[in-house]
Length: 160
Image (tube, rainbow, N blue to C red; front, top):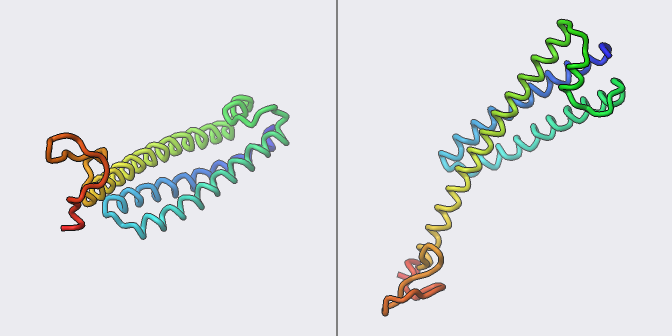
């Protein structure tokens, strides 16, 4: 099983590089969101997709390699590392694996935060559009009699 380790190590190192790149792209995305820079957001989205695909491809290759060469029935890295003799190589694989898991966790959290910012921005834009169209929060306004009136009113700010 030790003959698998050099290839697995290269895969993990590649995946770490991809995850680091993804994390920096997510940080750039956060700045672009703060600056409302739509062009940069579009560019970053394409870059993120590309890096995520590279990460998935590498992880898939690593998993297939483990299944084909290790005699294991699952491609679980933790199981593979635990099955190795306690050597410096096994420790290196464990360290790389733990670093990758930590980095991917940070990527997930950054992506979640950016998604929250984007959702909040979209909500604000929708509210502004509704206001300009003369709609209340839920598309309702109060009429002259003080009762709620649904839909677009003749009192739209865009008609002023």
